[in-house]
Image 1 (tube, rainbow, N blue to C red):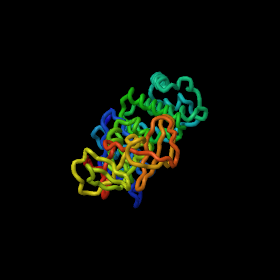
Image 2: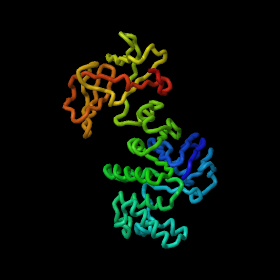
Image 3: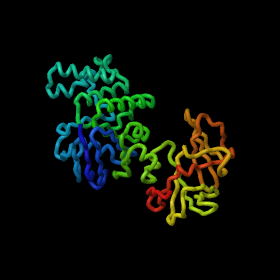
Image 4: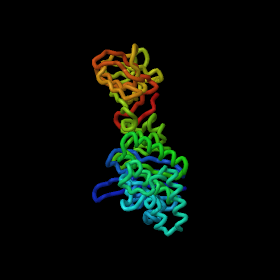
Amino acid sequence: MATLELIDITKKFGAVTAVDGFHLKVEDGEFVTLLGPSGCGKSTILNMIAGLEDVTAGAIQINGKTVNALGPFERDVAMVFQNYALYPHMTVEENIGFSLRLRKRPKSEVQEKVQRVAEMLELEKLMQRLPRELSGGQQQRVAIGRAVIREPSIFLFDEPFSNLDAALRIKTRGEIKELHQRLGVTSVFVTHDQEEALSLSDRIAVLQAGRLEQYGSPEEVYLRPATKYVARFIGTPQMDFFSGEFIDKEGLRYKVGEAEIPVPTLTRLPEAAFDAGVRAEFVSLGQKGFDATVRLVQPVGPFTYVTVDWQGGSVTARVNGVSHLKPKEHIKVDIDPQGLLFFDRATSMRIDIL
């Protein structure tokens, strides 16, 4: 068990700053995800935690001890790589037990621990196979088993599902979550997939260009995004934004083109200019609201995403089941004001004005 703290760490590659003053604290037993697009610095941060990259500035502390000068082996961390990194000439059993044999642990201890890990990951029937004889999901479980058997203080996962197909990715995601619940080991997980982050994490660190945009629980980053960047990155489909204005017309309203959205919880006109954002689940299609025209209908199994346009705006609604709406069909749109989020137009920061 361990705590992990990254204190204003910076990483430069020549004139390029990959990570810029990044600060993060992971509590004992937490599962934290570093989330962001390719090139935002998340894998670089993971490599610095593991000791595979030097820190240009700042400090990495494990259990309150600065480990910048320690090598990977001395940090007591285990890493699961994107490409699995299994030894091709070793069997599943040999791959899992390699780190213990390297430490010259007794043969009986190695066998006992390998068997226990294999049972945990349902690999017992594959023990004598080579990596090339395994599926992608099986190789991933072997890589996880090789990390688990070391009983490290911290697990590091570098986009471990990226080589799996969609169905296997969801299955393996569940296995990782169950494994963490069982072992309770402090874990840092890197991904660009916001669904993975939301489903796995105790807390999520959203990155942009090597900087921390927001750090909070999945509920916080989804329901109360700190910036427009976070609001766009988290959620499927993306949050819709409007550049409108507040008006006082039989109560306060937010006017976007020809649409006027009542904001009954607002008591006075704000002085600054704000953009509004809303997620699809707060948008209803039916017999009340403002007039719009259907542009796009996207069935996705249990839901249908319907995008509508009006003079001056566009929004996507989430409709339960299969929708029989057709493009160019006229419909009324109602937006729940409780789902509206407002962002300062100048800074892109979310502002609580309701």
